[in-house]
Image 1 (cartoon, rainbow, N blue to C red):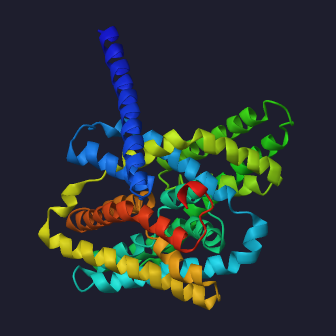
Image 2: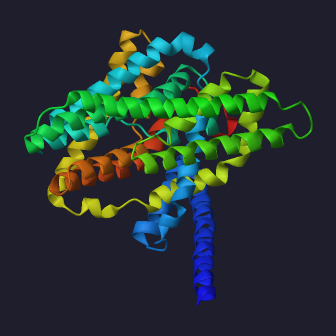
Length: 416
């Protein structure tokens, strides 16, 4: 009997491994087709997942592959952190902070104001907060693939890094305001600010500790024929440790330690402890290691999309308002922030468009909202957010590609 149970466990594990291989192959093929018709391969991966998941139903047991998505997102966040050199940030730090706050605040305001005419005020407030978050994955992957360089790229990466932390803070404040409106309880704004700030602080501290350890480890690597192998070993350990520690501590202590923020801070601290030669070596080994994982990440994201959220005709109005208001808030907020900093035209025109992708953090926030507001309120929040994510996930990479192309920052000859 024990042997039968063991064999069943092994069978399900290898079945998941087979599905992973199938997902990567299909994602790769569809991604190449999309590139052939001048669309980003990232959108192709998402479409491939949509095809073999919700549309055809070939992939059904996706839960066993969620760890792949978490690790891949950890590598993406880590790479964003490695792009945040203090020398570069000293020149653009003020601009990054102003643009990040301006687009987040205006996005929150535009979504909340637009939806409060259609939905209850507490739902509009929570959706406004969730709308502020931006998905870093399409931006990071496409800037790397295109080898983009210029003011838009230099602004996009730090903005998207700070944006998620700011989104978590705004969400905490929004919940503190929305809960008394929904249930008639006392407003507790102090806890609404203190709890997300504490969780952000713990995430940053954890990432900083791991980053220091990684930086010290990298410094011990000598110049020899096995240098790149050792760099890869340390980097993989750093990302796995960052993601797993964030998830385990969150589960054990009922916190929301960010599996995106921890590896991002790890990469940030590490990259500011080493010289540029070591950084280039590390960047090269990661770029050779992560492509299959990233294909799997985006294709799995497509499999997880639920088209049933579009089946309710009444909710379609709310979804449309959410998508349009979020786009307006991101674009105008970035434009006004860039104008206040006297940024160049490429940032004013295209940065907001490139910040429209939405995914992981927003899903997490919508789940958190549904736990605070069980029942109809939580269901409406999740339905609108998930529908918005489907739309922004599919068109987001196209808009990022368009922005980088119009800003003339693509340096990879293959995509010129």
